[in-house]
Length: 260
Ligand SMILES: Cc1cc2nc3c(=O)[nH]c(=O)nc-3n(C[C@H](O)[C@H](O)[C@H](O)COP(=O)(O)O)c2cc1C
Image (cartoon, rainbow, N blue to C red; front, side, top):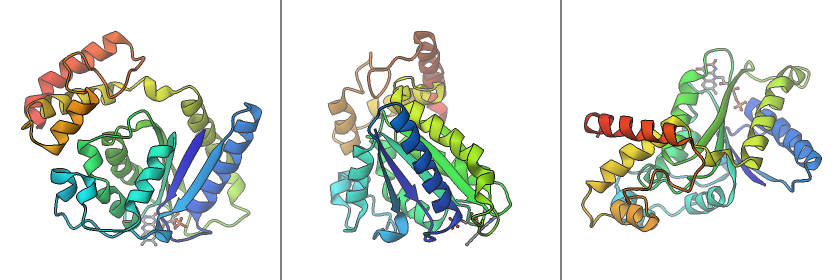
């Protein structure tokens, strides 16, 4: 099992990093108990060169290799592709994700058109001093869901400006919950049981690309994956309940004219 944790804070000893460290430690224990080899890699986005998107649309129109910014994004994208799951962790900055997380999301926006990460699990974590985390979690989920990730859970933790070592045991039940949920999701390949929302989103995208000009990069990508075939119901062979699939497809077809 291979988990990648991305931290959207510069603070190496900050709230977010400390919670991710506790989750990693707890997952190592679970992996050992289940005789499962686990590689847990934590990256601080602040350690990478991530230049802000310029909005040139080269990635959308000509493919991501055409991006004029040459930095660490392709290397990071490769790591995301090699991992089974993503633990995405952001501090709340002014009721939303940190700038680091937003830059990372914008640079990978082409994945909304070509959701190459389908089949992987994602867990979202937001830490905050005292206000709500719902808006921050919603921003993160809007990204990862449209990139194909299977969202297995999300947690917001109120931790003050900077929790002390004495404060940390208070967060252990939440740490336990995240570790259990993420471990189980990957071990049981829960991504192969897509949610109603994921099936619905697939159907709407499928209809959109079926109407797209066949010369486009996105059309070619969807065609090459076999996702435009009338019988294709998801990005990958799945185990979703057929009734749920049928309902999601019917609703997707009904909503399509209003959302595209
Ligand atoms: C620029 C900035 C903006 C912040 N905005 C909020 C906020 O809107 N609401 C809140 O309760 N805390 C806010 N905080 C506090 C952080 O969300 C909180 O301390 C977080 O856990 C810090 O995580 P870190 O230690 O991993 O960087 C803000 C902190 C900074 C530096």
